[in-house]
Image (cartoon, rainbow, N blue to C red; front, side):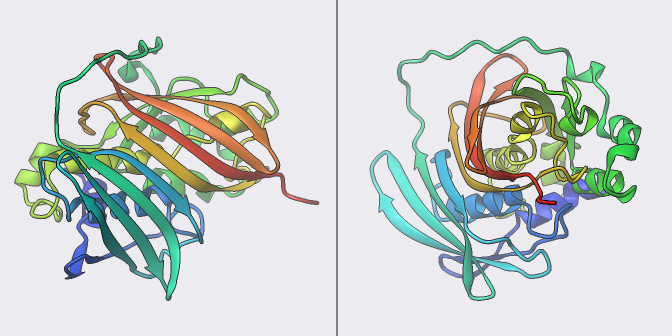
Length: 304
């Protein structure tokens, strides 16, 4: 297991400081605030640790309220809203410096059989034929705000093998493209081995919950890319927009393994009023629709 994956799993190993109160650590991000996927994943871990292991999460709805401080721990308080025969509901508030920075509601369900159908998986190339981040990021160093941007992105995403099907926004600045984007992703390491080797979260987070929380972590990395593509913008890395996630919703339809290849198919139906909407579907390599995602974010063009 590489050190970056060990560090990411460590972030998901929350310290219990009271029955329903947990403390999570943070780390530097590529922007001067806590990465949204981190706080969402940690909040889901906190909620999941108050729910029986046989009830995986089936949905979450969250709001990003304030920028998080990457230099300070985050306290997660869980409210046990409901424990029903089939469904369990939890509400989590993340607090830093005495103020809420994030709010999440999550619902968990016992496994049961039912009617099934799904949209087909869209076509996509084999992920192993696509360039790795280490291959593609340095290629566009001349477009970034500073030469250090590529190194910061590689460091921030070192735990995740994330491969764009087409060129990312920062590679085609000024070119208006269809508001669609696809990436393949998986963890950079085998999770069963990581848990067997005593990863920090191995005693507190079950494997099914860990997979879902890792997918939640990755889901915030690229979802707003399709908005940028529609306007020929490159994103924060080139400095032609400023933005942040506002809210985030996910529905977990089928089991998922975060260390297997997953296709993240993303699109933006609209942008207006300084905000843009991103929609995503996450498929397993076998074609099962595993997760649906919707996020709205602030997308502003810098003045002057």
